[in-house]
Length: 352
Image (cartoon, rainbow, N blue to C red):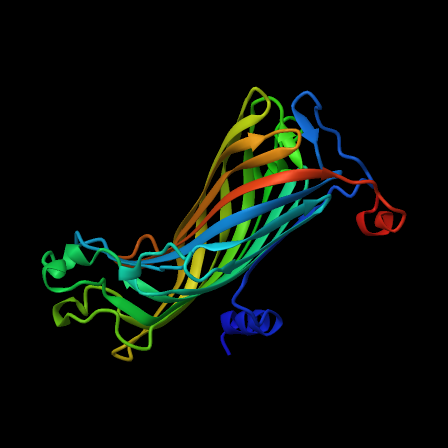
């Protein structure tokens, strides 16, 4: 069994649900308080934070041939999900579900099914993140580039209900200016960036991806040899990334945050095409780009905003034909802080 499948089957056995989960852990357990500049950062971790949230998660697959002007672009059409976000001390949880009638996805593009789970650990210096995402059902989004008159004869986009993507991603990065810049404030409401600050970051990452299509994606005979008309593609990418993050603080209560972290990856994998040919690639270079933009209000009791992340990976940048995958996450939230009086039993859980 391929190593990718082993990890995926394990995760699916543990989480037999198509709901979306997210868990965060703050590693500052107060056993050894880490110093930071209180003129720049204020902690609000001693409050319970509750926020209704709306979440959109989408996946994209691009088939590229550098010798042609056209690229195949397949995107998911995952419904908008609603739920609740909870933050207290080192613990954060998000649970969301799709509500019938409020999906807000494009009905002309078919339906996508997505299962996702995320685990994050945020320290003052280090940020570790792991997520698994499985998506089934994709739309050929740029069909008009191939068939300019498509919508003169058709009402809906081409829909590939059996096209699937599965991804397991692990990443860790180090924040250099951790005394003045708070990575936690950019990610969670438990801290507040009082003054504008930023930091260079450097990290490592690994991602295992699988793309599966039991029926051919490419139907035109003349294009069969121009693109990777794969039946199954599984590959591993490991490498380094480095970038910069910055949070603009406006009158202490408003903020705009941006992050850009490009990376260089070693790629290894194999592809089985529908003509039963097998393509193996190793010792090849891939690339990644992680971007994050968030803006909002962070008051004494109320908080809210918009949080957006895009993660893009390319398998073999120096080949004529290659695939890229992209993962986006968008969250809208409005929350309230509840002061809490700690009980004796809580010190055993939160190590206070």
